[in-house]
Image (cartoon, rainbow, N blue to C red; front, side, top):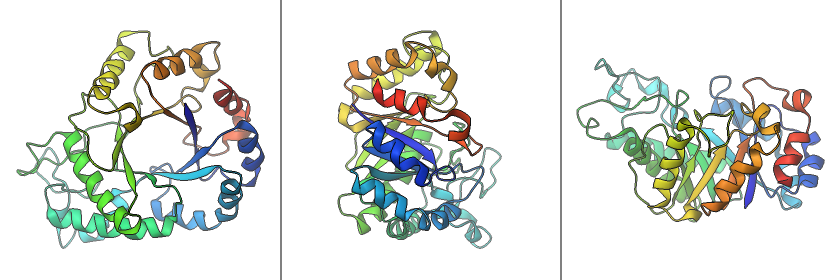
Length: 296
C-alpha cells in the first residue's frame, strides 16, 4: 500500500526533508486550509518552496497539491455582471459563496480555461491531481436552480471535476483528477475516464476503528459500495489519522486495524492529513506519529 502525507503549506519547509526521506514516504501532498488562506496565497508561497520540492523529488518523493479550487477558477468578481454563472441556494437566490452552477456551459468553460492556467502555475510533475470543488466541511452546498434540481450533489461534484479535468488535459494530456467524496450519503457516481475517487470519511467516528460502531458501519457500506462500481486502483482513501484523529491514532492497534481493513478491500493508496487549522504541526506533535504511519 502506497501512503501519502498531506501537510499544510504553512508548515512545510526545509526541516521536513530529512524526516520525509527517513520515513520512507514516496508521495507528499501540500494543502491549504480554505478558511484560512486563498489558492492565490498558496501559489505565491509555493514559489518560495520550489527548492524544497525539488530536493524531495530528487530523493524520489513526488509532490502533489490538495486544494479546493472552484472558487478560484470561477472568479467571484464575475458575479455582479453574470450571476447565472453561480449556484442558486435553497431560497432561490444566486450566491457567490461556493462553487458555481454546473448546468451553465459558460461556467464550465471558465473553470476549464482557468484550470489549464492553474496547472501551469503549479508545475506538478505527477499526473494525479487533487483539485476539488469548494466545500463547507461536508455540508450540501449544491446548486438548486431549475436545471440543477435533478442533479444530486455527487453528480454536480462530478460535472465540476470533469470541467477541471478538461482544463488540466489541455496542459497535461495524461492528467487524472480526484473526485472528493466525504461519504455522508451514498455517492451517485459511475466510473469516468480520467477520474479517481478520493474517499475522505471526515465525519466518521474517529475514536474507534472503522470496523466498530454504527456510524463507521455507514461509511464502510458506502466505501464498499463504491468498490462494487470502481476498481480498487481508482479509489484512494484520505484519512485524518495525523490531524483531528491524532489521539486515536496514537492508541495501540487503532491505526493498524484501519489499515488492515483498507488493505482487505484492495485499497492501494492511503493518504493522511497531517494538518490542523492552526500552523506549527511539528512543534505540537513532532515527527513520531509520521514515522509510525509509514512504519505500520
